[in-house]
Length: 374
Image (cartoon, rainbow, N blue to C red; front, side, top):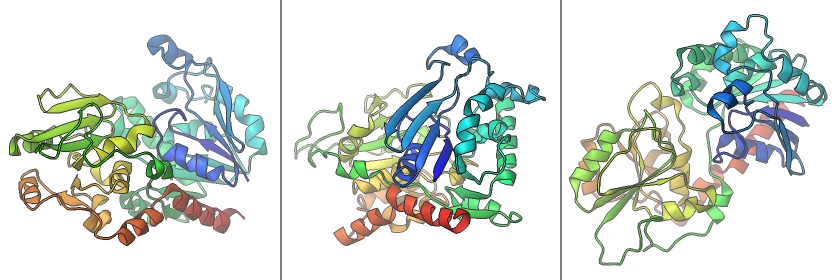
């Protein structure tokens, strides 16, 4: 089967669900990973990635394509494009490939204005995020909401990452919906790990006499990150230190016991997490929280680390593996009882891993595709 995969992020970005699914699907199918188009307008204003098109063969069955954006405008301006001319250049570039493909996979609501032109092809919409909550532009928010609603109507089936999305769509008329959570990358499991006495990267070595405790967070730091929890943890014990690894979109939190490492290459992620004593998932309560099935928690657990996490519909699904708090004051009691190890036996750990790799998710996708398209 030839799959045209319209992705939400660039393949070379930090490896997430889109790249993992595309790579797994390419194990059996011919996959064309279509990156977001960089418009000439965006390139002139902000620089960065070129607006020119690219085509790269990564594996035997996986090709990455970025369409030329010299004749397109920014996504937020599409509301003004009543004739649909903005996507005409992209459609011309993709038309030959679209005609030869067997299936369309869409991972971002912003692609609707392009894929709406595609007819007589099975279409899967992978609803991963409440995307309008992740952007600040009111116009872009409206564009994404409209695009998602249209995609849900157009799609032959929808895969979702969280229970909240599943419940919203389960009653949708004649719409097949499948819950497909996030997972663990196997290369993380096989990566070289540091010793138990090694500290997080950039923190130096710890001896057995060292009493300090490293709380670590991996991921983007933005408006959803709860700095009040960070402050509370640091106040509990002068031996507590915090390491933050990931892209920071907020003002720097200045504290002598807080270290920023920036974006960590995926190949170093296992060693980094191994240096943490406790892993953090300290997001704010709010409408966004229950829409996130956190990849970082799968990664923390893959390293057998204690995880302190905000209570949500998705973190509760991890059950006994996590230390959950509802309000920051709960954390004091939780930590007084010791850092709960997630797995009581190696068998329990192996079962968790086996059930939650991207390869396992790919097998689930294969069954869905066979049921619906073969």
